[in-house]
Length: 271
Ligand code: DGL
Image: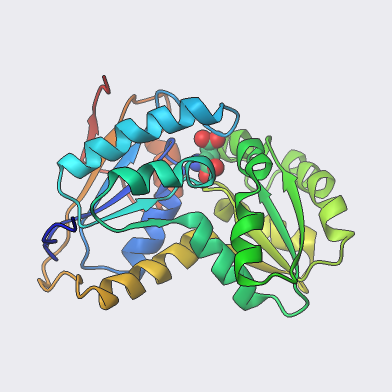
């Protein structure tokens, strides 16, 4: 049964760690009056190399945590969770659920003229073929080339956003994808928006980069209008962050992702 949703309630956003803050950042820019509860499983990140069973189990715990806090909307910011556990979230949630893969796939189909689309993501996301299914559901004639880029997450967390090692890695990963003459490349991982300038240089100006964080913010705005759930109050919104650990350099990395200072961080232990 759909519960009565309060437009003043926060939006719940979750991710395997702090990468999902790229989605929070896009939401803050697009929807400046919406409060946000963010959950990042910093103690157990990365998910991108874990099994489907493990990810589904962790995702269940996080979904329950946010639902208990009465969010009006749940956003799966993590591409890896969206790829293999979106059904789990939808089966548990009486409130609407949006996931980055749907948003990124729709934005890619809208952007591509040649229907030759590239997708990059973590190994689990790419192996799941979730982007392939979502894109083909919208454009059955699309020709997809995908590539797992396992090294990008640690490189971004190291802050090597414009480093020769990252450039070389990107050239290596993108070579087979670019050989397929794609006109659109989906950045299918929370961390990749931070590599946008470098990836654009490597891919060339003729390739449109689809940032799933921005696509998600746009989709969220659309759904809030459709359901009449925009926060009517014009007061400064509240942002709260829940994490399962505060790793070394958490503040620096988090602020880089968020593009602003990070306050109100609470550590929680999941059962
Ligand atoms: N958040 C993950 C994603 O978007 C990247 C980090 C991880 O592997 O957990 O796929």
